[in-house]
Image (cartoon, rainbow, N blue to C red):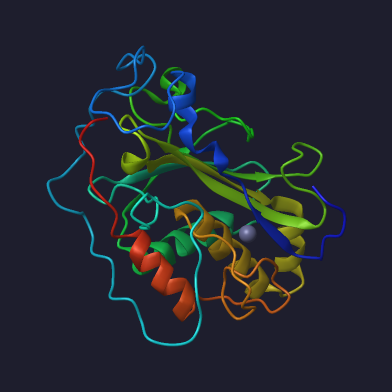
Amino acid sequence: MSGRRTQGRRTALVVPAALVLSLLAGCSAVADAVAPAGLRRGVDVPSRSSEVRDQPIGRAPRAPEGEGGFAFLATLPDGSPVAWDPCRPIHYVVRPRGAPPDGAQWLRWAFGQLTAATGLRFVDDGTTDEAPSADRPVFLPRRYGDRWAPVLVTWATPAETPLISDTVLGLAGPRSFSAHGDRALRWVSGMAVFNGPALDRKLATGEEAKVAAVLLHELGHLVGLGHVADPYQVMFATNAYPVSAYRAGDRRGLALLGAGQCFRDY
Ligand SMILES: [Zn+2]
């Protein structure tokens, strides 16, 4: 990572990591109609989920008018974004160690904002003691059972993980899977790492707007938004001007990310 970082920088963990399991299977991203060879349901990848509905659970709101653009972390061959499956809930677990005093409420608020902007349903599965790791697998059956690993949210310290530093307040990104080449890519798991001590200090000094901006920014990455050059969007790379609510450009991108395809194969 290159040298100069501004205070309050936030980053996206990602993403050429896209074809995680396809790479494991030794399969390049060519469309095909069968599961990647060698991937066993319940062992290497989840069995079919019983949570998949026929229709999206929530509805992505109509994209608002107004200034501001958006960017996606990854796109499908037709130009639409790689997105989460809207026909099933997205589970997350939280490692509470090192959280600011109101960390749980802050997370509930931020996921609520994300749901409002995407229509995606997030389910809090409670706490975990799992540590953040850059190469976290998307399937961890011994820890979380026969399903995609829930999104891991941690409040970490720079001493614990190189994913953050004294000037990096957060980092997040989704992980993708496809059994049918590029056109069937979707996000199936992910991670968000927040700098617990740094955000705690900001809350202690009345900088709630910056904390809100960091949470919304990282959750924006988690559903597939990338950075934009406009400092008045949440997805600007730093929070020099803390934008503590999703703006029109952010919302246009988030609405599209809430309107992804549904998948029944895993
Ligand atoms: Zn970022």
